[in-house]
Structures are given as C-alpha cells and as structure tokens.
Amino acid sequence: MKLYKIAKGILLEHNNAAYIIDDEWDSLINRDNLAEYLQQVSADTTAVSEEVKAEFLNGKLLAPIGSQEVWAAGVTYLKSRDARMEESETSGGASLYDKVYDAPRPELFFKAMPYRVAGPGQEVYIRKDSEWNVPEPELTLFINSKGAIQGYTIGNDMSSRSIEGENALYLPQAKIYERSAALGPCLLVSPTPIATESAIKMIIRRNNEIVYEDATTVSRIKRSFTELAGYLYSECDFPAGSFLMTGTCLVPPATFTLQQGNVVEITIDGIGTLTNTINLNPKHK
Image 1 (cartoon, rainbow, N blue to C red):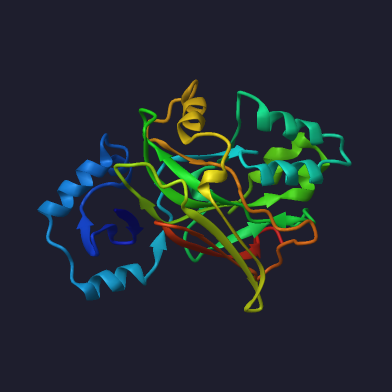
Image 2: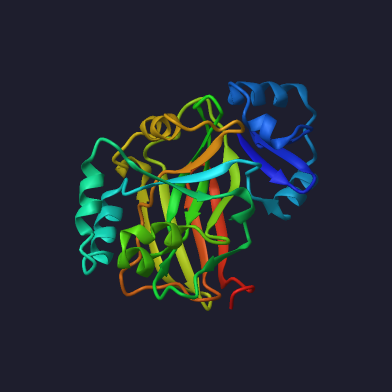
C-alpha cells in the first residue's frame, strides 16, 4: 500500500485501485497498526476512477511528511565508511568513521525540520561555500510515536563533502541547511518489513546525459532497522513520529560534484522514484 500526500488530501493506492482518505496526515500515519487500518479503509471506501487516479498521481505530489523531524544514520554501509575515510584523510579524522562502523552505537544525527524538506519534483540545494557536493540515496523509515516502524520512503540526504571532510565537527553545516533533504514520492506501508533484496538505484543527469549511475541492495546495510530506531528513541520523544534516513549505500567518485541543473533520480523497489533538480539557494546566491 502506498500513501501519497497531495494538495487535495491523502491518496491511498492499494491493489491497483486508489482511494481518497479524509484524515489529517500526522494522525493517520502515527496510528497503531497502520497497515491493517489502511486495508480496512480500502475495503470500506469507494475507489476513484482511473482518470482521477492518474490525474492525482501525475500531478503535484507533496513530500510525505507532516510535522515530523527527519534524522539520519551515518556509516551504515561499507561504501559509506570508505568514502568518509577518504574525504577526511587529510584532516586526520578518517579513524572516526572506521571506528563508528564497527562500534555498538550507531552514528545518528538530526537532519531537517519538515519545512526544509523538498518533495518529488522540487529543487534541492547545494551550498555555495562547498566545492564538493553529492546526493546520498537512503531508504528512509517512518517510525511512529511508540517507536514502531510503520512505513518506508525514499530519502535524499544532500551532503557537502568538502565541509565534512575538512573537520568532522563541521558535520551539522555539511548536512543541515535549506532544502538539504528530500522525501518521496510516497509512504510505502506494509504489514511485513521491506525485502532486504530491494534494489536502490541512483541516476544523475547533466544536460540530459547520464553522468552517474549505480545500484545496490538494502541487504548490504550493516545494522538492522530496529536497532537504528531503538537508538533514536532511547532518549527522545517524537509525539507525531519521525523519519529516519538509514544511511547511504551509493557514493559518486571523488572526482564528481553536483552542478546547478543536475537531475537526481533515486529509485527503490516497491516505493518508486524520487526526482529532484539541483540548485543554489536563490536567497543566498
């Protein structure tokens, strides 16, 4: 089942049919046993026509977020560890990433408030004071207020690698700024965990030509999703739930940096494709 946040409300897609849900986003996704509830909704609600369904899904989709905070996990894939070590080698911080990859406690950091999150088709920003910028494709969990993983979406954790590589203490500046995160296109809700063999793919286009393309699977993550959620909720309360990006598994080479106008497409099996265009913040050019 897929939940889409649209201008006219909430669209549920289930078994190739679509239903309009008259509810408030935060209260809907934060309820217990969300998958079971949505199955009942689809049974009790009249489906919209194929024309209306297509109109909504081909129109403007909003980021599937309400008032939730977005957090992120770092160095959960071997490729991410190696990239972090490479970028921080000259600053002497490479060992930090090597140690946290094997440590019992994961790296978790705050990423964004909802008003800084881009949705499908919207722009994400690169910092003008960073010379090396990359997107980071991440399977993203929605965790309700009780700490239960209720759904999955696609996340783009935009990263200023030159800033983080200069000094690990600059991580907040490398990660937290306007439009430094994107979520979408929907919230996948399932009574069972997402398949570990689900593919994660990223394509970056420049002037309509592919300049980067790679893919991997969720199974390559080092830590379990319940482990990451448990650490996030161990000393924090999230009354409306939260979103947790689970770490990047695809890293463009050190010779690559994003440019204005590049288009980033991140696809995860079962969820869809999140597409965003790269730009500088127009208020800070």
